[in-house]
Image 1 (cartoon, rainbow, N blue to C red):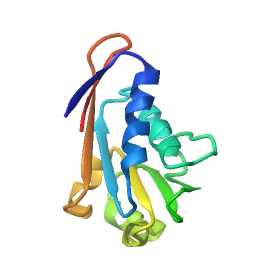
Image 2: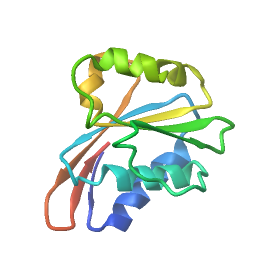
Image 3: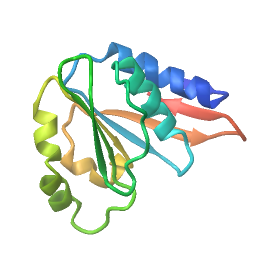
Image 4: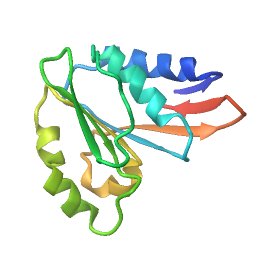
Length: 139
């Protein structure tokens, strides 16, 4: 499915709709250029999962954890700054363990950096800037 979001709010609403449909155990990989709307999308997805905390990018700390309405956690991961042995970094952070709990939802920005480490069932969402405030979101 392809969506053209004409504002940050529409990007957030698209994320909210996806978040509201999740059952737990999902891994969602986000790909796209810098400023493409990934974090805004995650903010909406978190709302759909019942997260009440403010969602901010984990660029400098790599992983943020939030309680979700499914009885588990939303793990928001940002791989933008990671280089080198990403597999070792993710194992050290416990990311593989997060993915094993079917109450958790794991969403990863810049997921293409770790594509070979993610489960086959990963749901991919691509973002593309198509105008000053417009984003193409491919689910």
